[in-house]
Image (cartoon, rainbow, N blue to C red; front, side, top):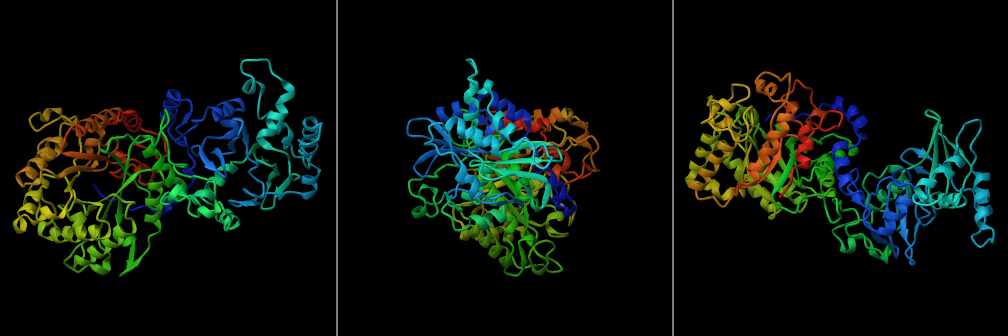
Length: 637
């Protein structure tokens, strides 16, 4: 399948789409089966005390979604939500942390917004807890300091304070104790520590600082709500999605970038953070509790994705969709020139972001890296380097950098097509030294990573200089140099395509084609063709090596481009049904180790006139096509 070159003009649209929510069908289904699990963030409220507090104080509207597990911080068990941090008290009760206190997050500039600093006069005037009339005094003080009108604007700060926790939430099975409601709201907000103030860069925004949160009035919608500040505390701990201004303020503090899963207790500088344990604090969960939404099987359920030049929110969203579906692998194609920009000069920024994002979502990574930079090519080498040692050096550099982070590399792909190798370079004798170089480089950089023989493209066309039948190509490759290729791959990649044929269709039943075509060659029948690959491996004495479907998909597109007319014969529901059936069939084959669905999200980056569009299972607004929902609901074994 053709590679994607991301169009820079799409980046603005991607940035605007990055905040879209995950598919509601999946989120609601998982929420229904386990009300404590939140598919929006893949975390669960395991602790009964936290769960009861969460329900009794308004749930998601009050706290936002959980963004961590329960973990030990500064001697207390805590759980981070988007707006607040819950802390378990020695007596079993629950309190929310004074998030904006000097010891935690006393900052005034976050993500381009400027908040009022604590006013010493207001802080000193706050009634002390020792006051015998504290309950009434603190509420009167809050009402005095938090106005509902500020300079003619209906900010509703006290009204928001006093209506966050409702009688219905706090007393669902008993008469409302109205006098307690203000004190329950005090648990959420704390006392005001500043007067209202405009954001100096945007006078549509008015903020007021409290001990535990910041109220935000937006004049454009005349609405007031609390900011998602606790999520920023998580960013300080992890260093992920950390705005530059907040990073500048938090740098040097004991919480800054402390989360490091490679260290004991996952703490980077343990001397600065005693009585804490961040192990698994940010490892996603699954409904019913436990670790990871991924299935326990080692079989590879994966998606081919596009994330290059996506902003970080879109990268997170993409990885979240993989995890949301219960899949374990992220497969990404990489253009070699995008990294090695001059001989020995590397720009790792985009690939670092992709790999680190995948790892943060507990996903395994497979990379397919191909197409030599122009400075390594010759007039006759096409898209490959004139000297394969350049590829060996590059693959070693990649594997060394991502040792333990990238689990598999596909060494080139579709090398039986000139579009991937260059005209007149589709001969297996051109690919063999490239495979040897890539395999050697990977193993030198990371001996534990798998190196896969690149997948030939399913085509029955033998066109001199342009293409070779995929099975014929593999047969010729194994015949070279006494079958030396056997020593240079851990598994065989395959790119079978469904075309318009059901997964169980074979050349013996060509009438099964939904389009009435694409049924006159064995390469059009995915599982039959992969069975032929396996037969060849048995003949060659490498039956112990597995086959990976590193790209497999069904195209559903009512207006496909030329050459992909069969896509119009498959509607979205049929695409979903065929994909689930194909995964189930592949899983049942003992010689197949995994399958990467082609593709998850390319509709976000290509128009409908592009052949890759129809294979996508996520629409360009991030919503799920039926195939994504079906794959998410499919049992993984």
